[in-house]
Image (spheres, rainbow, N blue to C red):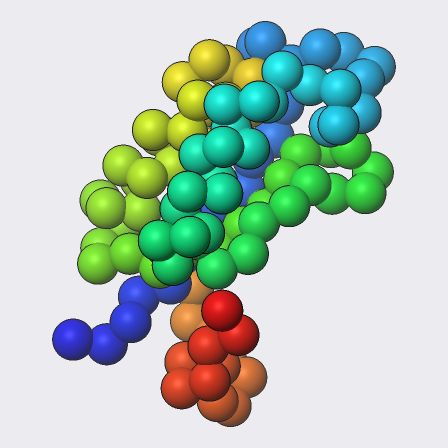
Length: 102
């Protein structure tokens, strides 16, 4: 089965603290969750936008439903700090799939 990649986009949710950068949002559970997923090689890369408007990441999952389950289990999503959108993604850079950077 070929690898399936998904991009997730986090934007401020109802519990986002206005006028505070991403680094000052209540994201402790999110950070631990993302670190675990990275260790499990499910999150390829993830991080905040420098303009503090949200975050973006790429995950590897078996299906869109699996990707949604991963994102929706993030404590930041569950706590309403961020809202999530997930999109299927096809890397077009030659060698990306064969030469995983992680």
